[in-house]
Amino acid sequence: MTISICIRTQGHRIASLTEVLMSISCQEEPADEIYICAHKCTDASFSELEELMLWCRTVLKIDPQLLRVNQGERGTPINASIDASNTSLIVIVDDDDLVLPNYTRLFSEAHGQNPSSILRMRVYGRYQNLSPVNQRFSVSNVFPIYSKRFQISQTMLQNQTPLIGFAFPLRPLKTSSLYFSEELKVLEDWDFILRCASILPVVEIEQHGCIYNLDRDRWLSNENKEIWEAARKQILANVNSESFRSKIETGDTGRIRAHKRVFQSKMAQILSSTYRFFLPQVRRVVPPGGVIYRMFLRLFQP
Amino acid sequence: MQFQMNRVSLLTVRFGESQASIEKLIKSFRYACRQAGIEPDIIIVDSTTPNDFPLTNDGTFNLINTQSNVQHSKGINIALRNSTSEFVLIANPDLIFDRHSVDILLSSISQKGVGLVEGRQVPFDHPKAFDELTGETSWGSGAFMFGRRSLISEIGGFDELNFPMYCNDVDLSWRIRARGLSIRYEPRAFAHHTKHLDSVHRVKQSCYESENILFSSLLLAYKWRSSRYIAMQSAFIRLLGSKKDKIQLSRFRQHTATLGIDRMCKPDSRSADFHFLNISKMRF
Image: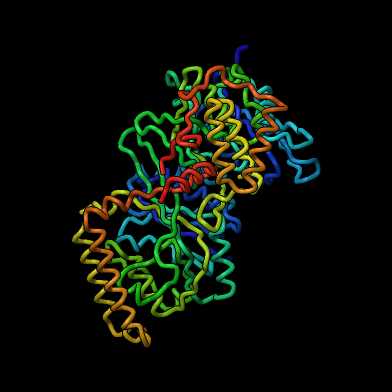
C-alpha cells in the first residue's frame, strides 16, 4: 500500500470533481486509497456526491471513500483523511485540479528511494474561463508555473508550489503530529508546507505531473482580503519563531532578502493595472499542426 | 430508411488499446445512456492485427474485426453502416464519458440548425475558437463528436480515400456546414482523453502524426480553397519548410495528380474556415 489520494470538496464543483476522478482513473500506477472529503456540504450536494460515487465504480479500480466533515476550516477534512489513510504516502488534490497519467507513478518511484522525505514535483498552470452565458467553458494551454526548485527561504515569503505538487510521507507526519492548521481559514497549505519542510527533507521530482487551474478573475477579486492578510501575518509570525530560525542555513538570510526584493517587485507588477490586463492573456504562439503558421510567423515577426 | 430514435450508437475504431481502456469506455457510455434514459448500442471496429492484444467480447458490444489496419475514416464508415440508431457518438477508444454527457449532447443536437456537436476533451482540449454565446465553431473533433446518422450517411460519411486518418473530421464538418448547418462545441458534455505532453509542454504527437497532419491540411486546402491559395502555401513550404515538410509537399502533388480529388466547384471560404494559414481560428 503506497499512495492515498485525498480530494477536498465542498460539493459546489461536481463537474470538475468528475474531471479529477477521471484523471485519477487513468493513472499508469493506480492509487491504493482514494478519499473524497466533503467539507461543509449541504445535504443536496452530499447526495450528488453519493451519486457520483456510483459512477466511480464504472471507471475506478477501487471504490473511493466518502468522508463527511461538517466542522472546522479548510484543513480539517484533510486531517480526517490523514488519520484514515493506511498507506505510506498521501497527496492532497483540490476538486478543480487535474493530474496527468504519470502523477502517482512519479511519486511512488521517488518514495521508494526516499521513504521519509516530502516529495515535490513540478506543476503546470492553466487559465480557465467560465463564461456567464450558457456556462461556456474554455481553458488555456498549460505552462510551467512557480520555481523549478523548492527553497525554504523562498517559501518563507511566498508559497511556491500548489498543494497538488507535494506528496507527504504519512508515518513521519503521524509520529510528529504534523497536521493542517484547523484555525486558518485560508493559506493552510502554505503553513503546512513550511512546517513540514522545516522538519523533513524535500526531494525534487524533475518532471511535471499535474495541472493547477487558475481563475482569470483571481487577481481582480477583493473578496476576503482581510482574511487572507490576517492568515498571511499569522504564518509569517510563525516563520519568525525559534523553530524556523534554527532551520535557516548559511547564506539563507541573503537569499531571503533577494527573494523579498523580487517578490515585492512582482507584487507591484500584479497590482498595476497594465500587468493585470496582460497577465490572463496567455496565448499559444504555435498551434498544433501549424507548420505553415509557424513559417508565417518567421516571415512577418521581427 | 428509418433509424431508432431512442438509441445512441457509440462508434469507435480500436488500434491496440487495452481491454481495460475499452471496458472503461463501454461502462462509462452505458452509464451515461442510462442517465439520459436512452438505449446504448456499441460498435467497435477492431483494426488491431489479429493475435495482438485480442479483445474479449462479453456480449455487451458489437465487435467487427477488420483483420488489418483500416484507419479511422474507413473504420467509422464500417461502424456507421452497421448502426441502426439515428444518433451516433463517434469517439476514440481511450475516452471515459461523464455521466451527463449523452444527455447534454442529445439536447444540443436537437436544436434547430445544428448538424454536429463536439464535446469537450479533458484535460487537453483542442484550442480552436468558438462563439461563447452559441457555442458555434468551425469544425468538430472526430475524437468526440455527436451527430445524426441520417445526415452523416447522406453526405457520404468520412472521406476514406483522401483523409484516411487526419483532418477527416474537419472535412466532414465543412461538408455539413456547406449544407447550411452549424457545428456546436458543447463544453458541458465532457470526456477524459488520455494524452501526454512533450518536453516543450505541448500535447505529444508522433512523427507519423505530425507529418500526416501537414499532408492532410494541404489536401484540405486543395479541396476547399482556390488554386492561388495552394500556390501560396506551397511557396511558403518551399521557402521555409523543413526537409520533411518538402517531402510532404511532393507527396501531396503526387497524390492530387495520380489519385485525383473532388474539389469544390467553387472555393468555399464560408464553410472552410482557414484562418491565416491554419485550419481554424485559435482561441489561444
